[in-house]
Image 1 (cartoon, rainbow, N blue to C red):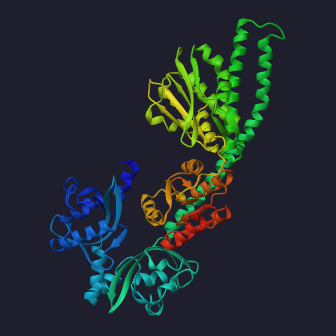
Image 2 (image 1 turned 180 degrees about the horizontal axis):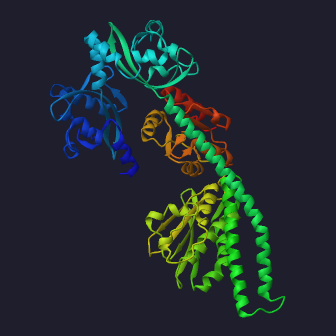
Image 3 (image 1 turned 90 degrees about the vertical axis):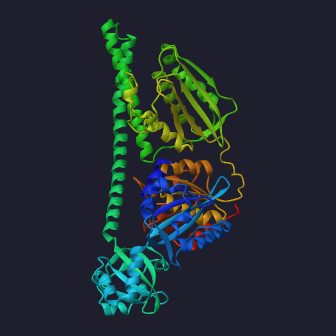
Amino acid sequence: MDDRFEKLLEAAPDGILEVDQKGRILLVNNSGERLFGYGREELLGMSVDDLVPVRLRTRHAAHRENFAAAPASRPMGQSMRLRALRKDGVEIPVQISISPLPDDGELHTVAIIRDVSEAEAMAEALKESAAQTRQLFELNPVPCCVYETGTMRFLDVNAEAINTYGYSREEFLSLSVRDLRCPEAAPDWESEDGLRCHRKKNGDRIEVEAQRHPMHYQGKEAHLVVLRDITERKRFEETLEEARSRAESASRAKSEFLASMSHELRSPLHTIIGFSELLAEGLEGPLNEKQKRFVQHIQKDSQHLLTLINDILDLSKIEAGRLEIASEVSSLSGLCEEAVSHVAHQAEQKNIEIRTNVPRNLEAWADRTRVLQVLLNLLSNAIKFTPAGGRILIEGSRAGAQLALSVSDSGIGVAAQHHESIFDVFYQVSATTKGVREGTGLGLAICRRLIEHMGGRIWVESELGRGSKFTFTMPPAGGEAPLPARERPVLLVLEDDRAAQELLREYLEAEGYDLVFVESIRETLVKALEVRPDLVMLDLLLPGESGLEALKSLKNLRETREIPVAVVSVVADDTALKMGAAAYVTKPVAREKLLAMVRRLAPKVRV
């Protein structure tokens, strides 16, 4: 099981079960164990009917059969009282949401089970005992209100609601839920659980998180709503976002400074290299052996410094968004031959054989100079980390819709835990290089950024002591041709929350859309270039990243700038629209509102 998925599953506050078509439990999380009082080894393989009170099992089996006949995600327990049976024989009230999960032709069911004992106890207390209800209701430390379902007028409020909103009890009872809502809030917000924007009596804005519970009160259909003030939490999130923005500005300033300094350093370095070459050639008189050795040191270290400066300059251009990619039709075999000619002398000094196997008909749509830069970096690394007498092989092939070039060596290899880190800036695997001088630690980081800017990706396959194979992909020549017709529009969705991913699948796949999920900005750009989706949907709040950066990059790339981008996020900010987004909706968003937006931006028939 994917480690991240397993962590999310185990951290979920509600019980989660996966049940096969025969009703046997296949998967359970920690909350499920606590909810039912069984150990995991007891639950796995148990019939889910054993978790239902005996008097309800026949009805429950019928419900399972009905669900199998017409599987669809839906909540249970909204109009009926559901009960679960714990190991100790105690019945508990629950709310259950179920979803189908096809698995190798067999229908499995995922059930999310919530213990609503506390909410039901409060609702029952409100109905059965006025004195007990008033005490429980009034002493609740968060604002609680009861409103009539149809009119949405308040029937009761507790002391904390009065204290928070500033209205007297009498004023509250003359208001409806709509009177608390901020003018800009979505009209359908009050019909769902989730975030709210409310205003106090004095006009102050307050952000709250609402949970509703249906009940009967004073002989009327009503809802008990519990409101938790999250204003400070939202302010904290906004502060974090502001800090992130400042950090990005500082990063850009750093890149600009490095670029400026790199330019300033290259001029005197050019002079140092030039005069050291004149000295080495003996044009101003012969040098003795010691002087020659000194000049060779100057030349070697000057070239190393020049490489470092050039790498920093390239990296700063990339990070500042000023990297220019001049794509054209490029012969991969020709590029490989040119790269080999550049490093031939280095290879001969270590008696390393370099072979190429690149078909002549492979032509990429890429920046020729940048591809050559990547090849030279990979070949130089291969020579550096391959012992004398070793072998290097360059291969070219087609990889699905892309072309691939790989550089394999018989060198010292890279341990698995470093396979991703070696593409980070200034990362060096010093523990495994056995004294080999590693260089700047920028080469592979620049290679990754260059390849991704050209619409490809790069990765390594390696084991310690068994050599390495670096592979990168590029779009083939003619990549600007129209995409083949699709039966279903493809939506690329940047969303790192697995529950949100599942909800979007339920909303959109049944409506005739195919979804491709990504969880980082880098993956978004790579997939956008690879699949050319009909619509990109972005969340803004990501761990350590902002979806706005993905939007900016998509609009800056010639290959993706025409793809419509929609932002679906809890953050209420129209900055994305100013940056070129085609639509912006705020979570929680109603299903029909989301579908209307997707139908408008990604029509079923390509035009």
